[in-house]
Image (tube, rainbow, N blue to C red; front, side, top):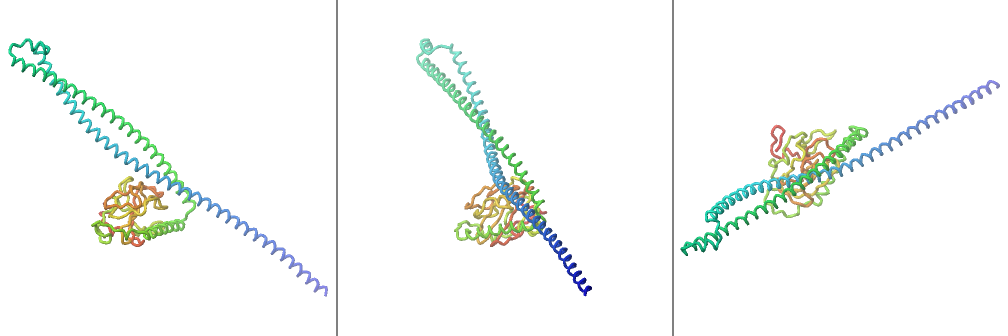
Length: 387
């Protein structure tokens, strides 16, 4: 009996010790779990913070690239105006040379008239009349005298008018040139500031990408952007211009396969279907210089002309029958939604928008939202170069 009590005591003691150990172990596990949950909470908060910062930077990048495009367009217009002014100045210079030659010619004629007057003894009109015995000869001399004086006065007045006109034109041209130079310097300074701002934001965006995104994350982001683009195209096609009567005699888009001119000259650096961050390119990337003119490949109507996340400044043209062409990463946009464009019309200039570090044009073709290979629709590329 005492042995049995001892055994029961040992059992209860063991149970007590076990329960105490189990409770302690459970408390430790719960503490570990709480720490893990706290870490997850902090990490989630940090990720959200980084995402918020990144989204803010993307918004800033969009604003900067839009403004950059506007300044670049203004600079181009200013350069065109400057060129026209320079041509006008050259014409004025030619006119000035011609007028100076005319003035020299008039001066020589006036010298001849002065010599003739001197040869006549520098006589006044009345003296000439009284000194002549022959009335007929006197009449001729008086006519000649009147002619000389009138022509001399006319030439002097003409010379005076020419000089006044030239001084006025030269003064206006100097003021116009001065103003154009001031505007050019101002716009160039603004553009420099915008380039610096854009490069800074692009660098920050790249750093945030390194911290936040893995290859899987980048693939998901690309798919998200492609999904957004598909959604945009679908919404545009829902209100497409297929029912708008177009009297253009050009062939429909579907009959131009293999004959479309490329929108820019350059090198095909990314082909349709090639790898893109774990995904695929649904268009082509054409490497060319920044500021190069982007042309519409055929007639159509502008249905989108704005900034889009991942594509920068983007133009979409509706060609009817569910066909659309896309032009992305632009520097400046020259057309507005609703405008009709013909083949070869300038619609934008090549840039680095969308956070890119190298200038180039993304060119895509869609039919009912489905990507088509531009290489099969445009003229044959030669050694990877298009024109």
